[in-house]
Image 1 (cartoon, rainbow, N blue to C red):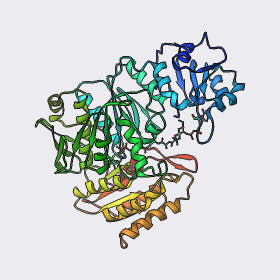
Image 2 (tube, rainbow, N blue to C red; image 1 turned 90 degrees about the vertical axis):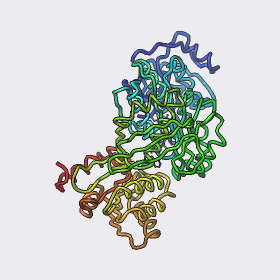
Image 3 (cartoon, protein in one colour; image 1 turned 135 degrees about the vertical axis):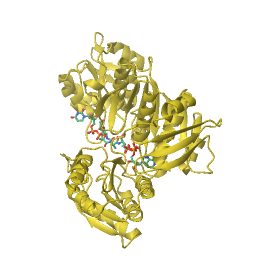
Image 4 (cartoon, rainbow, N blue to C red; image 1 turned 60 degrees about the horizontal axis):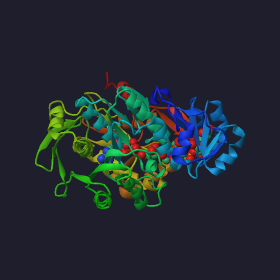
Length: 514
Ligand SMILES: CC(=O)N[C@H]1[C@@H](OP(=O)(O)OP(=O)(O)OC[C@H]2O[C@@H](n3ccc(=O)[nH]c3=O)[C@H](O)[C@@H]2O)O[C@H](CO)[C@@H](O)[C@@H]1O[C@H](C)C(=O)N[C@@H](C)C(=O)N[C@H](CCC(=O)O)C(=O)O
Ligand SMILES: Nc1ncnc2c1ncn2[C@@H]1O[C@H](COP(=O)(O)OP(=O)(O)OP(=O)(O)O)[C@@H](O)[C@H]1O
């Protein structure tokens, strides 16, 4: 899904808007006749244009979208919005053209205008940070449901409109898709939406045309240094969310120096949250109890009130994610006592697909499938599992091909320090040599802990089964990487593979799961 959503994620009853009105509102140069034309939607991928759409042709890394204007026209586009170069390239398409210097930069506001998303909006929550964004939007969703609010979310794993669920591709949809989704949500009375905001989304205008009611920051650690030249550039991309043009209020987790820095540099009012004792913050989180199946915590408000609840997830970091969600809800105007009452007795019943998801049963080793693919995610998940495991911890992992190669040695080193045995396997090699990726991980592991037990098994199914042969009752396996995904990408081809399903099958084969 690149650019324009399937029908379910679009408004079913769009109200047409005049193309001339659009051109006038934005001051676009017009080439061709547009006076009698109406527009009902907007798309930036020619393949997902619906009849009545404005097709927006933007230059990309591989192509100029304007080159696909004829296909967009064949699919029912009424006009093209593009830059001057695009207008030349699309001259043969027969579509009237609206010209602007940077069509991607215009897309968010244009999509907001077409879908009227500023009218009667839901309460909008935006979550950013290296790790924990998906988790926080699911936790927001779970608490909102407990409060009786019809909620929606967009995350790396899924887009949800109330109870309707659609699998995601990008973490943050393109602006055309995001505004269509918000318009669809309004049609079915969704009143609060959690939106995961990646750094790339901020750099590439994907959340333009939106002013969030409350934004939250989880943490910042090594990732995406293929897209950003340094950690500072990566931080600057995320900091952009904490500006009045994009959000009204913020909540910042301040346990790291990046959190402190964000508070200092934020241009909107922010509340602060800390999990580490002794850190100066408005809200304080204390973890009360951790087991392999749940974490119980207490959250203290600046006015001395407190909330106690549990989540069906392991790890202090997940308690921090839940606390961030709760503080964001309070900052949006929800009463803390009301939230406390809603989650006190049964806890927050969030199910987050593929985030330290326990796929094992009551017998045998505990097996978690996780989406962690950064050094910090490895650290946090391993620490959480170590604290609740009496026996050995075996870690199965690989690393993304064609993505930030500089984190691989560190990932290997953290795995070697945190687990008793490693099974290094393939993740998504994409166009890279998978053996070279495994070698980088193993080199990092050996440099950190030279005598660590390491098994190299390229095939994921075989790797997991081998890990299973190394453990027994009281032990744990962390299989980090695949999370909720249902494919493995090799040289441009997506092969079906669900680590969760396969791990359950392997546990059954081993007689540990009924
Ligand atoms: C680097 C990046 O962000 N790339 C995005 C970009 O692709 P691109 O520049 O290569 O596009 P292109 O292939 O040159 O095509 C140019 C234009 O022509 C259009 N086109 C192209 C071919 C065609 O037949 N018809 C057509 O209309 C395309 O839709 C596009 O609008 O525009 C595409 C269309 O929207 C996106 O799908 C694509 O995201 C790719 C898949 C991607 O992997 N992005 C990653 C880096 C990303 O954004 N990740 C973040 C963070 C994840 C995390 O938190 O870890 C995310 O938010 O997902
Ligand atoms: N607060 C946190 N701090 C550190 N690591 C975390 C935190 N929350 C989750 N993680 C780890 O990061 C992994 C990904 O979590 P999650 O999907 O919520 O993050 P994300 O920011 O949405 O990342 P992505 O956009 O890649 O999905 C989890 O599986 C877990 O290993």
